[in-house]
Amino acid sequence: MVPLKKLHTFGFETSARDLVEINTEADLFSIFDCVNTTDYYLLGEGSNSVFLEDYSGTIILNKLTGIDVQENSDEFNLSVASGESWHSLVEYTLSIGAFGFENLALIPGTVGAAPIQNIGAYGVEIEKFISSVEYYDIPKGCFNVLSHLNCAFAYRDSIFKHRLFNKAVITKVNFTLPKKNTVESSYAPLNQLDKPTPHDVFHKVIEVRREKLPNPKVLGNAGSFFKNPVVTNEILKKIEKHYNPVPHFRVSKTTVKIPAAWLIDQLGFKGKMYLGVKCHERQPLVLVNIGNGNGEGLLMLAREIKQDVYNTFAIELENEVRLVGNRGLISL
Ligand code: FAD
Ligand code: EPU
Image (tube, rainbow, N blue to C red; front, side, top):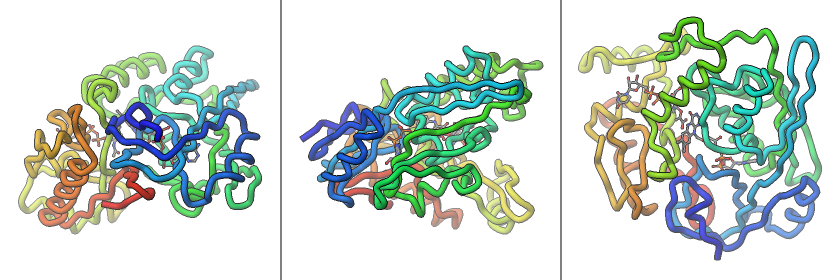
């Protein structure tokens, strides 16, 4: 058995049957010759995956590294191996004067996982800079590439969560960073900065994230546990009859996004704890392992939050975090 505590940021004391590493792209052929096609979990840094109990399959751990940079008069083109650390890539691009990733500083995880949920923060989603994604097609046993348009990117979503779920190992992500990229500082609190440079944004984002989000090295967590729900104007109006004001961001003429943190906060969940898993006091959208937590506690708390939000607001919360049980992904 392989201990998983250090392989996922929630840090539950669980284990997996066995583990193989991908160190070169060629390893993928031999790995998928041996691994049972339904019996594996692809893992980067485990910052969006929680192993709730002992996992009966094989962990396939991504260790692919390498960054290639090409530059012309208009843009930087980067081809980055999927096992590279996302935040280190943000630091590296800033150091060579290639800008755009600064709003996404300090997001944990690998480069390869970034397109999967189209990571986003402080007014930028990574899809803005992705030109294509290269992957190993597991059923076909060959390499393939998807252009940006074919990745079906959306808020915390892409084709890799749907049609290509468990069928693709992302091997490289290709990015284009235009030299004329403008600094994105419209999102609070970046909008308080006076004519910020990309470096200013980078430092501010790090400062705010350190203030708001618990450090997984200190308190196990996987970031926002649920996605922010997108609801119709009618649902917003119904909620506004009882709560005013209701924070929201317009998505389309007929829909708005309501912060899940606000919904959970209204129901008084901050500080609530089951079996060592707690709703964080500063950011109730983040559930944390206080040290001795377990999967049962996490499921109890998450299910209660989901049910209470539904009963009170008629809104169905969807978990952002992947929950892995004994035989693979489970739903709430
Ligand atoms: P893992 O958890 O290892 O994997 C996530 C999913 O992707 C799994 O289903 C896995 O099977 C699959 N996968 C991983 N690698 C591959 C691959 N190469 N090919 C195919 N499938 C693969 N996210 C945001 O969007 N914005 C934030 O601001 C943000 N803040 C966070 C803050 C904290 C403190 C934490 C802990 C998490 C935060 N997250 C945020 C979530 C997380 O950092 C991202 O989802 C990240 O991209 C996950 O990377 P990972 O390598 O750790 O993924
Ligand atoms: N709020 C409360 N009570 C609180 C905290 C927040 O009511 O205690 C309300 C406030 O109205 C606040 C709003 O929630 O304005 C939003 O809070 P915050 O700015 O902390 O952002 P979030 O919506 O909780 C999202 C992303 C984060 C991302 C930040 C910054 C999702 C699910 N989460 O969080 O991403 O870093 O915005 O852009 O979209 C992640 O995906 O793991 C993640 C951390």
